[in-house]
Image 1: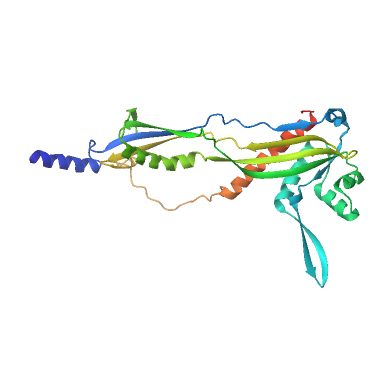
Image 2: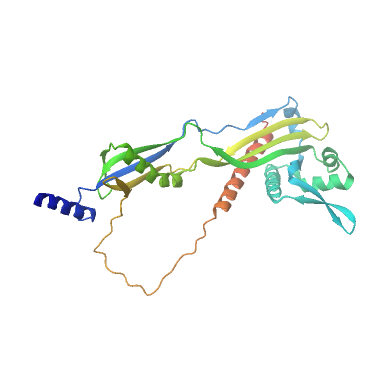
Length: 302
């Protein structure tokens, strides 16, 4: 009877951190693995005439996608007026495209100028580009901001190890299904922070049309996604008591001297919001696609 009482006393002491033995510690690791995750290269197609006339193209007019212009009709004072609303996102993207071509030495006629000339003189895009002195029209068929998702082969590989209260990793631990379910749940928070199952992406589809003939001579399309995060490994120190597992408490120095404070300073966070972070990543990807597009066109890549 005394021995049984002593056992319970020991277990109580262990659960309060005085001894170790009834509670069991584990070190958990998780790693993201994705095979065949290489990005598809840009698709470039050209006509036999493209390389022959490439050197003659000096001035390019940019034509925006149809969905960039939202024409609406309004009523005012009994008269019908037509107004054109240029969507903000399209304006930013078209501006980046124009800047990208200008960086490679081309004279660029803005998409807004092309639209204005069309409407002012009731001309087709090609006729307006010819009137403005363009050699070619960069027809932007579509620009898309989206996400690409991990393939079916993407997975988390988890490992369990024996440990101690200090978090030192020992040999592999073999646990039952009940305990493993708890481990997976506990690691879930780490995994969500480490890596998203989807990556932001940008797609641009364009073609180059000769003003003189109206024939398309060069075509480009690429879906470009952000690279997966560098940090794809995580670890967690847990303690299990009976059938319940939880993150192990961090050890603190109980002998640390009391700190007296006469004031406090708190830094203001300047971190971007999730929305602005997505916007910044999409913008960077867009610039990379535009640079690749113009580089391939100007260098005669087909």
